Image 1 (cartoon, one colour):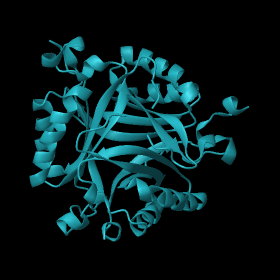
Image 2 (tube, one colour):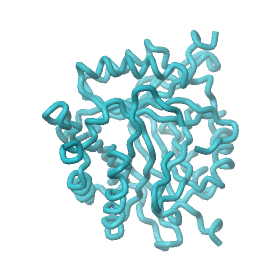
Image 3 (cartoon, helix red, strand yellow):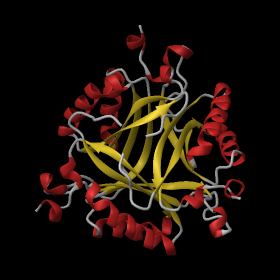
Image 4 (cartoon, helix red, strand yellow):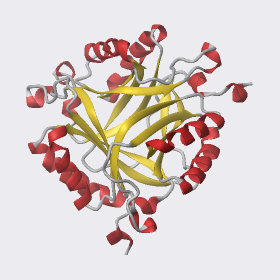
Length: 114
Length: 114
Length: 114
């Protein structure tokens, strides 16, 4: 991974969930201290059923939403745990990776910076 | 790269292709053992022509699709090779990177886990 | 980070900006030597206000655009600096990370390869 000059590493959390449950993840993100998110609507998907569920989670229709949120790496773990709990009841997939931003203060909640 | 507690590294393969050829990549993903994908439609793009092609691959119109699929790192290479072969005939761009998921079993096909 | 066989590391620059300012970033990308971009329209978002601005940058409406561009790592820094300057006047968020592509020549401008 490169060290981008002047950029700060953050956690990027991406959740694909049925559109009708999008508000649950949005509320979770904000209540967990995320300062914002980007939402893509009308996403379609197939799977990811796997042998664990024994059936498809998603059919191929345009009713999914993708929510992307950038949070400080320090606070990512508790947020990931919260999303996992929600997802136990509302199917979805979550991807987490590191990204780099130029204005880290945008993604830190007031409580954390106080 | 952080080690996210409880998350498993996987390969994230992202393909941007003309919408009319989306089904070819979808079929390839599934036949290669991917358990699912997320599709974004109505994507537009410019380029990426480069000097190799000598012309634009995409014009700026909303007829592109972006397909995202998560697969085990072990099986990524053969899938990437397959996408490359398709792409030789149907223009498109492919990006690959590592991501982390909380339920790796969702992204493993039955054959692999058997 | 894995070393993907036959893939070349590149910088992936992602900008979320109000749709009406999308053309400014597009022009900047191309004039800075990016050979193309992918654009997602109708994106919505909340935040990222933070304490720096003291107000929300985005409300939750579908008027945002997400622009994704792949550029050689060597030329990423000057492009990032340019986007930062634009963003001082036009709110937006930018994420940068490494990705891997199979045809790096697609993402290199003629000037650079000459």
